[in-house]
Length: 338
Image 1: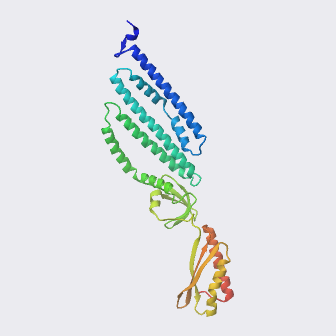
Image 2 (image 1 turned 90 degrees about the vertical axis):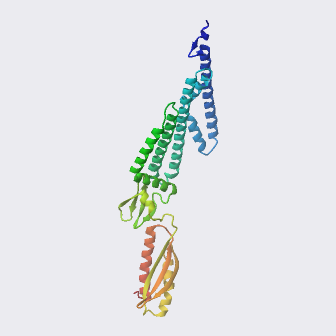
Image 3 (image 1 turned 180 degrees about the horizontal axis):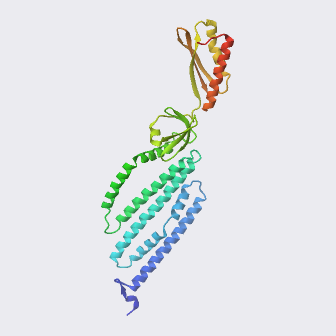
């Protein structure tokens, strides 16, 4: 009897040999295709400016050799008559495909995270912790789904009870960590919507200060009096926030009282005097001055002008200079405030 006609598990040795040749051939072809595609993509990447093609190179490089081996073995199994093993191979192949998809997904999440960091780190260095944390949780969620689907593909394994247990456990964890999760999603909203970034001067209710950093749980602000203020991200977003960084100028409006005994001729000169005082200061723009109210002992003049800078110190220096100049000029003109 020819040795090639001997049987093993219902298949002749020649069938087993042919299956081995098919498997090895498929593996070699897949390997060659992978190398050719990688080479073509790399040459294409060198001619483009976008970084999306770099992502393709990274994802191709993450292709799992074990998946290629499984595909090759599965292709070789078509030569044989092994229905039970063929079903097992299909299950293994499905599991490996899911793991490969999770590997590619992790690469995509890492790419998106690094891209966000590259865009934000120069503007807001505190974004690093939040983006890294979100990237980590994204990969955890991706691998959890992939593993559950992989377990579901194992013959004879039912994941209904496991999903029910995970659902109950997830609800319990979510209830226990709802404050942390609320602040985490608020941190995500801050970094995506960017109502402020590190270095911005903002007001939150009665508090004024410069944003130091926004973390996963809280935002730190250096107040104008020197102490560090810490707000939870969720409470911060629920508050009314004024951001002064992008303000082009500051409107200054105030009133002064002039005694009623002041002669009419001097009252008429007040508008000219005020305009000269404001226009003589650097980075100021005169708007108006009007006698707004006639009181029993004084006349109230309302004065409005603009400081052409968003810097708080420039604003205060201008107000200081204007006020002192009012005192000097009014004294020279014999105009008494009251």
